[in-house]
Image (cartoon, rainbow, N blue to C red; front, side):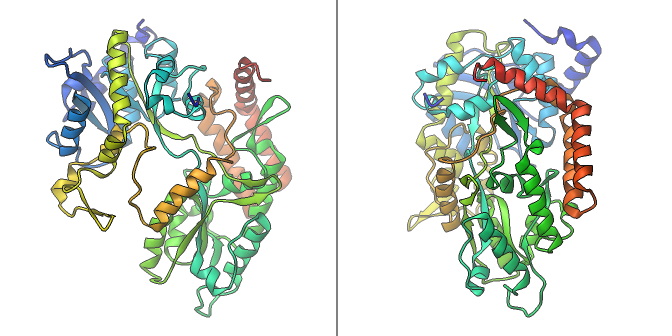
Length: 503
């Protein structure tokens, strides 16, 4: 393979609050999903209750043709409690605290403190030892399994996402207008950004464009982590001389700071980047030539630019060479994972039945069912091209159907030219992507203080780029991070790494 009860500490008051919250979470859903202890049906079908996030105002109808086919193909009766994604983690925390869990649920944040504490208490089945017995689950990536592990153990089935999806989305029409070749390394990237800002790539006679669109994506500067890896830097943490070092304490991080400051000083990026919540909006206006992030965005970016510049064309680039050759950043490779509580699934026999269900879900036919729906209902194929149904009722039946998915390795690609290109580049990225070596390790201090400490570094990074903080002041921010708990985080991460015996 590529690869009891713990609520006593919670306190009576917290338990009452938690029970109140879980009752609220189940309003509008099927109450059976919160009980988990329903027996198998007389005809041998598996009775499986679940709690899943919904990203839509209207949840999947119980009469959904997608749900009916999923149940038929897996010989399962599914009882699903849908919870809005915006409140999902809070509701799950309350549900875990109550101990009244369904037989399976999705943990959107598998390294949340309440999940870690529950796993360590023995609340969930450790599924790692069973995976090799299932033809599809045995294909799970060792890298991703390592990323989701808690203390070296696998407590769930991750929901697969491409491991390395990052790259450049570039205005090919601007390259053509300026007779430029796509950049292949950092020096060429800088020259292209400079030309995009200064040589009138949109041919309107005005100097009103920038090279790189930048915004604060989730409080991280768009593209910064990717440029850092291009510079030969680490992905979040660096393993050097047997020690884990956070990225912001490396020489490459300072090189990246200076690179972004140069782009800012020369007006090659939008000057309001620190106030822009989504840098893609700068691309949408047709005034920026490049965006760095998940390349799946290429299609959406091109479609939005075409609303103001009909002739616009986006191309994708996944390889930019730096001091260490071609580089790209690996992601986690998953979006949440399914976990199976021992409080609801009492026996190994039932655990194996549930794993058989998830293995079946990962077959090609069902992967495509959950991705596209039923041919003739949710979509048709016209000359081999996917055409989504315009019937609102039919489309509503596949609301959040992707939430049931585990692996996505057998999905047919019916996408546009850009979507198909991104799929191929994702595969190429996976062959040379730089992983985060600290991904498997847990720091209790980071769980408690991580957001507060990260803000120190994020604020100092923005100030340095904008020229309002010197290199000395940047170092003072790093010292503040260390003194505020950063040193403890490093100590804990390195202690976890030492347990692997690789140091």
